[in-house]
Image (cartoon, rainbow, N blue to C red; front, side, top):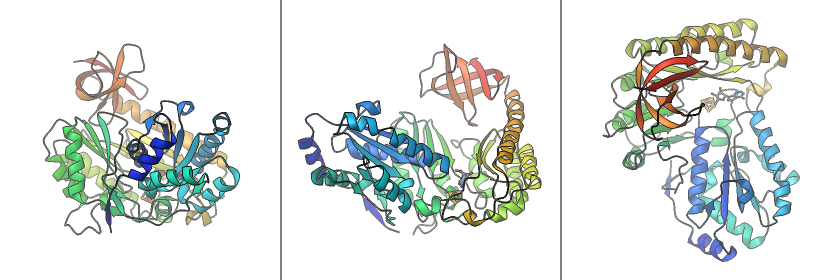
Length: 458
Ligand code: 5AD
Ligand code: SF4
């Protein structure tokens, strides 16, 4: 594993200053997961570092970046649609530059498609090329030629990249990159590369900076945070990293995502239970409740093992809530397999579910599996999960009524005169009262509407 230190591209700063009469404006749109949102913040940081300002709307920008996601076909279609829609803007302003980055740009056939069918896309680079973006931009401006980089296998961790965070109180903190799990449906290991962890000193330094800057909600990121530390020279694992960070004094919360059930252990649950700052919420994607399907998915755990860990967590922390990702309609999923998923959902009682219809990704193992279930049946199964989830959420919400909770105010609520705030267990409450965002408030939960808690200042 190798680490490199980010270097500001002085040459690029000079080129930008001489090419544009006034500081050019950048607009970045990130799709997909939090990792990608954090990459978007780095793209903004690296370019503002060489003289760009930020545009509020794509119409005002001199450079538009689509930072893309490849996890499902639907996400890719949206990107192609949105990039296509920029053609008009480009015709109106020939100086406008358009760049595509992120996970889609890690696929050769996608880069080829941009080359052939989207002539107005100027720059393409993959997930591990953010630090090189200023150099690519100079190349484009100097040669007046498109700069489309084929996916690179580059896997160094670049430390100290500048970044422009979207929020002043919620922050993303990547602790590892890539994934080695090769779940049979998933494209991520192919586009984000091998699993690699940041050194704990660098994580701890960034964490201190965030706490000192007043960040109240810090989410540790990785495709599989539970395998943090593998391959590092230091003797550390995720539970120990959590304990180290939790020891930093201050008024803040730690969250993390995503945990893989095969690597989540009672030691992790203990670290949460014994912590002062770690949110009482666990996002533990189960994907399916059928052992046969879990095996086909290459997940390396059974529904029973998963439930045993949840039961342990429930015993240690009765106030804990859970969320999960579910894939419906994996190749060969039968009605019986699906019923096992429903049974597991009923048993765990998730506070939140992210439910997806299986999407075939070329190059993955599942793409080769026969998939006879009609799409209509899959959408019916999704509807059944959502209906079930509604009941579960109503029950969990109802149990909160009458409690007074400490919650971090995130902004305006849905109704006039209300604010919305996030509880330690990741539920949100809309309450009447006027507390600025980024502050904690004590809120009394007075009711629940759908999945939404309602309350007033205590
Ligand atoms: N089809 C549908 N959902 C997928 N996910 C990952 N790959 C696919 C796919 N091919 C879902 C998983 C994962 C979440 C981030 O996206 O549920 O946990
Ligand atoms: Fe994909 Fe599985 Fe890795 Fe998650 S753990 S990114 S689902 S391969």
